[in-house]
Image 1: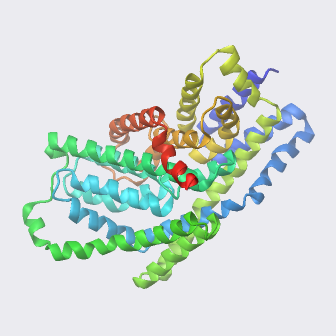
Image 2: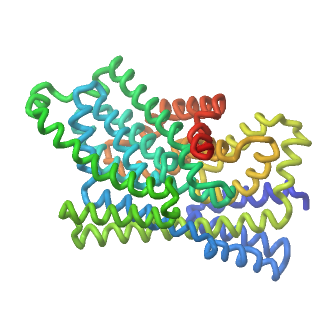
Length: 441
């Protein structure tokens, strides 16, 4: 059986099993185990089993529960709500200001958590009801929250970039630095779009009424700025220690988790309910990540064991005779397609080991490619018909927001993400300037 046919059978089988509604890790693990047994017989079961032990040897995976805990502690203790109140007051006088403030909130949440799930949960529970109550267009604000939450996998401390660093054997710090400017650029483009759209159609995002603005004094506005101090201090303490080399990645994540807990205690919000909810959410999300990573490693081991990853290189470079940039675009398109069925973790662990050697052979920087991969994941997350964030939003949104509304809402933001990809491809230094400056220093 040819490598091309094996590739087609394994990935098509995976898509079919996923469409039956099975859990992602179960579908990936089942296809891996079945393929190994069919290809190698009884002894083939040892290949995916042995691959699963890699999870035990990935010491940096300890950062996952710690970063997740930090984000949920800040969320459950009400610190995220305080932040939204700050953005609400300062941005409210602008047309579309509350939606722009929501993007600002998502940027801060991304810098505290590193996951899109936390941003989605906070945006849907804290920002969405307030935006709808203020008369904002339901389609626009639904897109704002979905697009804003996707920033969590690009802005440090991105958990996805940590996993990419382990697979690609690249420094985590340089990948985090590489994600800062593209992440802020995308957030600014989101905000600019909202502002222009609401200037043209004020009914989509009305400003706070004048009588309400007059009730808030400048003194109260400056007091509200204190809500941003705690998250900034947590981020600076965690990232500053890591940037200066005082702590390792795992130690820095422990510093962030501890700082978040002490902040909740200082604000007198560290109750039993907060701790219980935080621990439950952390355990749930961490277990989901670990199962997906384990299953994806098994899948990758079976596929790689066939030597089939060489078939991709032969197909793209020799058979199809594609140039380097054409190959790069093909890889990114495959991320979009896979992202409709898989989450970023499963897609990364399955596909990255196949693509990264090809990226190096084509002369592209693997750090730059990592940023392109993450932005493409963001596109895949909100692309119909099976985008991951689309269904998260459907589960969290109020009944008046339909699935059609959710699909319509993401169109302009997908266009903005594609523009960001084009800018980063055209100007690689946008992603590489900070890493190069840091390593040169």
